[in-house]
Length: 325
Image 1 (cartoon, rainbow, N blue to C red):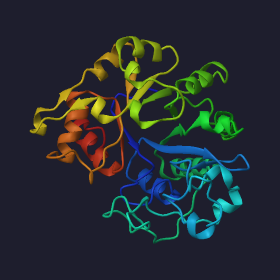
Image 2: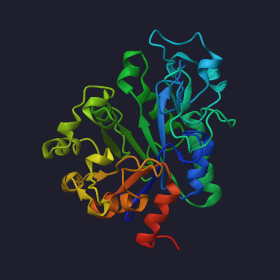
Image 3: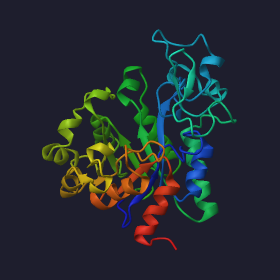
């Protein structure tokens, strides 16, 4: 699981350049030298694991135009309400948000033009096949970094996303490839279930958010960051995935960044630390991409990082380690 050099983890693929979680984004991330490529997974109405960051479809697809009558009472379009065949009919696009006048606009205007291109939502199996194929044809290995999205919500809807994902991993030969797969989740009970019920040998990562975010399940992320909480995580997981501000504090002068102590405390109980997310187009005020990388890798001494721009992070890591000539 652990690597001598820090890991470059492509966040939703090369999402700074190509719409997130499309196969094109994953192929680009592979070409850019990512060590691992992330897959967020939710289920369709017919129980198929698809790669999508949200349980909702409208931020990254044209579902509102294709199926305007299919929103739930809250006005949202849930992937779980659509069959795989219906989701295949959608066009995926750059991430959007609702504007004040009700139209959708790009979250990151400088990225791939919103609503253009011909992209689709892939299944987990399709993405695994793509990455395995690229590993063979290029001779370099990129691993899978799978996140189970809202597993408790899925269970409440009558769907077992953990079981569905594990079945795909077993079918594709990845269920025992502990050097090639990470499984992550914000929900601690789901990770415990993977470890104890499914008896997975794959490394598990406890994602750590903020208690105000309303993540799936009943999890106290403040408690997780204490020495006692980290020791508890170490009983079922192999690492943590914290939010970057939980790992470093940035002063007005970014060169004076300080570690919060979380990485050191996690390392003390044998946990690796893979924070999220470096976005070169959404940096902390007064901070350059290089300064942020230095703060994370050299000041906080993290073990890997999620990045929307895997080429930038790859270049930084290679420059510091001399790992690739």
